[in-house]
Image (cartoon, rainbow, N blue to C red):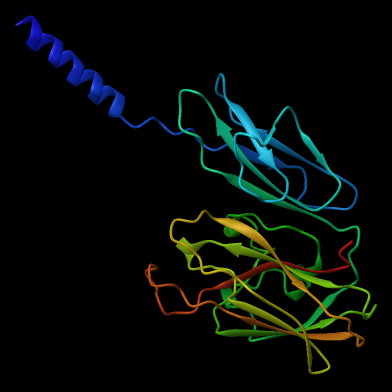
Length: 261
């Protein structure tokens, strides 16, 4: 009988050890201002005893050797702050990221035309909203004047840049919300007087991704006119999506023309 009781205890102990550990919730990232000229401050928050927060500033994966968060991060350059929570009694949290953008090296820019026009329900404050340096919220309905949305295969835009040729990077601030059928475009191409001076392709999205925004950077070759033509090619919703095969919505809240230092 004593032997059977011992075996029973061993089995129970084995089952207890086999139970998966609870995963920590991700930390919250709070930023003073996504767009800034001199500095901005990012705070990481997760209120639980014994939790250690670690972070990176270049968007790279956060691991046990990453920098330990000890207080607000004062940033003077563009950065992507990624963070995770660690605790010896729990599984590491999912990683969260927030991007901030310095406007120190930005050049004057205006959007003179967009074809087709934004969808009637997502016209924001007009094309001028794309150059007003105001960041839209992740819940796009909370800042309806900031976001412009298109449901189209190809968005064609004309940009006026009075200080021609000084910039070497065109940056798009985009929303990624697969649940709302919104995804970054598949390809962006930039032309100067009919000559292609920039192009970038984005990676195929995976299921289960978080709602987030991206700064999509398009490097530019030297150019000379004061007008740029941009083609934004929408991504088809992937096979795993409920709307597979249809073009994803394109949501923009800002376009920046900058000289990357």
